[in-house]
Amino acid sequence: MSSDSKVPSSDAEEPISRNEDKSNGDAAADEILNGLLTHGRKTCSVQAAGDRLASGNGKQKNGYSKRASGPLLSGVCYCFSSCSMILLNKVVLSTYNFDAGVSLMLYQNLISVIIVVALGLLGVVSTEKLTWKLIRVWIPVNAIFVGMLVTGMYSLKYINVAMVTILKNLTNILTAIGEMYLFRKHQNGKVWTALFLMIISAVSGGVTDLSFDAVGYTWQIMNCILTASYSLTLRRVMDTAKQSTRSGSLNEVSMVLLNNSLSLPFGIFLILFFNEWEYVQKADVIRIPMFWVLSTASGIIGLSISFTSMWFLRQTGPTTYSLVGSLNKIPISLAGILLFKVPVSVPNLFSILFGLFAGIFFARAKMS
Image (cartoon, rainbow, N blue to C red; front, top):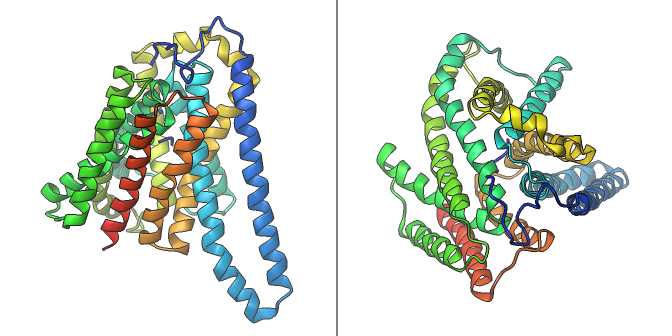
């Protein structure tokens, strides 16, 4: 669910040595948690205020209040989940110097599976029964999904959050090219202009990145290729998958369960193949309680992204959802720079801002 190895760097935002004092990791973790709690209290205050307003203004005003607060509350929850997931993964992988990205992915997905199954047993959500016929159809998509998560984990290990969000724009370029060749979907001139601006921002951002790491950039480029492949492959497989179910349909919750469940055996295989299990057993970081708190929180938030994105999409629509997703990169980038004390120059900061606004321009161009 997640949406991101091993060479320590002297840069301020890169992993600390395993022999250094762990108080730096705990301080950063406490800072992240305090920020999350502050956002949570604000969200609850907004919801409580909306409820008080609704209860005191009669039936007609009550309906209006719910319509007005629904998109706002769902949008805040979606943005909060998305920002928190990236920042928490960065803390776990870099601040705590955890060198087992596949193991972290496996743990996060296991948390998601447990929660979805529990919600299904309680009748909160409905899921399609997993059959061998459905699993066979979905395995190619899931293999790409696992690769997307793992490469995303390792890119966050090496690259600062701001540059990760900028380089993710390359996914839009690859997806647009894939749509043109696979689905014969042609983009308008504004879209191609926005894609060209994204290329410029990515290249200039990499050139001016003071904490440039070739390994990290390689992981992120691989992540962009796999993310684009996942979205393109998913479109082709979804119709076939629906025909493989007993009900003839496949809702979003079922797809979340399917993806995360099938990723578990893939994750176990990769852990054994890369001998991560031996590293995890000997790692000192797994004896730090805060590490497990953050890892578990990232798994829960990874699942919440799926639910809040569906909630926000129902409350608004694809147009608003796309635009907010682009705008959401701005606070993520700024938070990543400030929280992890990333060294930036004026040219690099300009490249980051240029890339962020290129993403907004792309979203607006897709609307036209």
